[in-house]
Structures are given as C-alpha cells and as structure tokens.
Length: 147
Image (tube, rainbow, N blue to C red; front, side, top):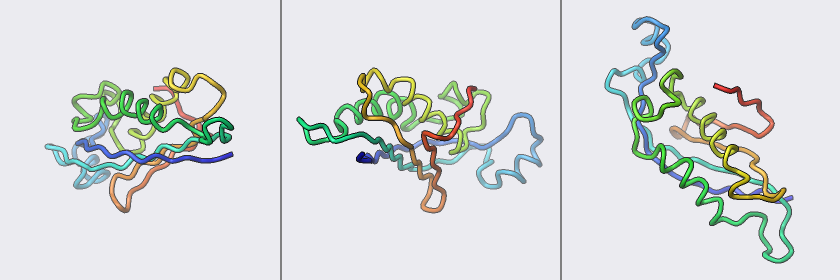
C-alpha cells in the first residue's frame, strides 16, 4: 500500500463563541478567539489517501480526481468565508478547527465514491493546520459523530 498526501490552502474567518455559555465563560474558554468581530486564519489542509499502485498508471491515486473533489466539496464552500455566518453546518456548532476538520472529513466521505468508484483509493486521514502550532488530524479509524 502507498499513502499519498495532497496539500491545499484556504483562508477563512470565524468567532469561537458557544451560544449556551455566557459572555464571561466564552471569554475565559476562547480568549482572543472570542473577539466579537471574529478573526481569520490561513489554513493548510492535507488529505491523505492509501491504495495499491495501479499496474497500468503506476499511481495509487489520480491526483486530478482528488484535487477536483477537494476543490468542489471543500474549497469552493469554505475558502474566503466567514464560517459562523456562511456555513450552515456551523449554525449550531462552534466553528473550532476540530469541528472544521470533522466537517471536511464528512464532506469528503459523502462524495468519495463519486470521485473514486472502485475499491481504491481510500481516504485515510485529513490534517488541518490552523497555525504553525495548532494542527488537527482526523484518521479514518476515528468515529465521526452525526450532527
């Protein structure tokens, strides 16, 4: 098996604020990320897939197909967006990078077979860097809860 990882970049803004908590608790919990006007990040998304090397193409994944899937299902929806205001999934969920990673993973899984109808490749993990110090990973073995 071969693992192939493709890297993508996008920008988005958000405000970390839980509706069920008071102002003081939100400020304590999220600090500067609770700014009422929000703040932005230049995210780096890595999508890793695995599969056997195809004997005809010599590749484990068609990178153009993966790029198209990520572009259409992820980047077109969230790049240069205010996650709180423009992404319906975050109407009831705080748009932390953990939750953003879960959303990305869910969207890729939902459309995976349309881009890759065969058994291979398989989505292995996504990794999303919010900053140089804050990096989040969702492996295919993790349970993703329905919202």
